[in-house]
Each structure stands twice: as C-alpha cells, then as structure tokens.
Image (cartoon, rainbow over all chains, first blue to last red; front, side):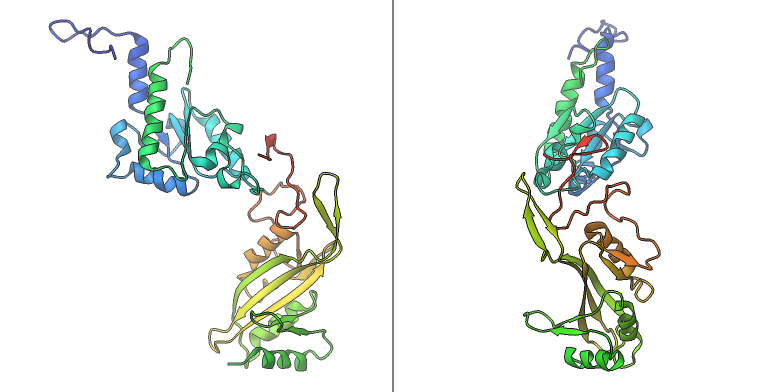
Length: 163
Length: 176
C-alpha cells in the first residue's frame, strides 16, 4: 500500500502521500446510514451482527445522513421511497458513496414488468458506486461489494473524485 | 350457529324491499349480494342482531370484475368501459362461530359504495386500500385518502384490469 513502508529508523516519523493517508482513513471507516428497505435489509443486519461483524471493516450504522459516508440501498425502491432516498442522499456530506444491494435496487428485480410502484433501479435517482447482485445477496456478497468500494476509494485522488 | 341460507332468510325478512340475491354455484362459501347504497344498513343489522352477532370483519376486498366491453387500443392494450367493480366482505361471528360472505357491485364509471367504517373499524384502512387500488368511492368514509400509492399519484388505479402505468413520476422513468 505504500503508507507504512517508508519509515525512518527510529520509527517515529512516517512519510506518506496525502492522497494515500486520506484514502486510507476514508476506506477504513465507512460509516453507513442506518437504512433498510426490504428483505435485503435482513441480510444487511445479519452482516452487521456478531457472526459476520461489519464493524471489522469499520462499517457501522449512523442514524443521521449528516454523519454517514455511505448508504446501502438494501431492497426494493418504490417510487414513493425514491423521493425520500434522493433527499437523504442530498443531506449526506461529501464524500459519499452508494452501494446498491440486491436485484431490486439494481434493476427492479422481479418487479421489472408488472411492478407499477417500483423504480427500476436506484441509479435512476442517485449515482451508484457498487452493485451487489443477489436476491437477497448473502452477507459475504455484501462484503465483496464493500471491498470493491474500498478498492475504489483507495485509488481516488484529492484532485479528482472518482468514486 | 346459522348456515348461509338461514342468514339470508333473516336478512330478507328484515329488509323485505331490498334486492338481495344469493349465489351458491361456486365451490367457495355462498355469497349474498346487496345494493351498494344499502350495504351499511344490512351490515349494521348483521352486527347487532342477536341471532347473528357478526362482530368481526375478517376482510374487505375490492375486485375488478372486468365484465364491461373491452376495446383494443392501437398499442395493444385494452380499455374496459361499463361493467362493475365489486367489494367483498368476509364476516365472522366470534361468539356464534358462523361466517358469511357479502358482495356489493357498483358501476365502473362512478363506483360509489356506502362505507361500513362506523360499524367495523377494521374497514377504515381496507376501504382506503380498495379506493387506492380500484378507485372505489366509499360514501361517508371519514378519511378516504390513498394508503399505499403516493398521495400525489394521478387519478389512475393500479389493480384495475385496464390499468396503464404512467411514463414518468416526478421526472423518474417508470417503465423498465
């Protein structure tokens, strides 16, 4: 990673690029908005609970969008909810990241044809960073999505936000 | 405990000038049909009569009978004119352990049915749902708003058989 390999011999001084340091800080404590929509939310809660322990990746739920770094869209996005999701997203401070979890949030899932009330993909209202497929995805799949997001943040630059 | 035929006789003897029909041709429970603007009078009777005591409205559901004339549109969809929309009431008496099913049908263009909200409180949200999904107007309902769809949804009703989804809602594309 390059953050700690340029130590001086007395190991009190570390030299690193600002990009690396800030990216490392950001990706190590992605606080997610405590927000669940449907059955995917159950898997997301299982991911947060003790046997999977989301906290070991620095992910923990925050109860206000103003303290959150990421939002996991975990479930079916109805047209009624889409307006609220957009509002929550706008209340989050930059940098903010979005994981779309499960088929419904990705593309409408089983409601793709006859779901008169379902938004066919949350990316129609907010920009998504990582899509996690599955119906619902297991916690392991959500972790894979989180690691992908971390990968994305690791390659960010202060001059240009990519994720 | 009374069977549906006995219940029908009780209704007929108490409301001699009402048009009440009985349908037992289906394999399900027999259905008693009642005039939509008089349903609340019959409902009140069914609840308070000492031989009936229907204290529980198990379910109230709207149904699109789709029995009007169907016309094909140019884009392949269908519109229905005329015919009826129905509401089914499933009643149960917790003390006398008998059940009955009521039906009332109203015309599709102006579906007005008397509310039974002041008889069974359960009917409040059930009637709002039937209004939301089928556009059935319940007369004398205290709070007839949409319950599931957004309040500002245009005047279309999703569970009608000839429903067409709008192209956009608040700038969001609705079709796949």
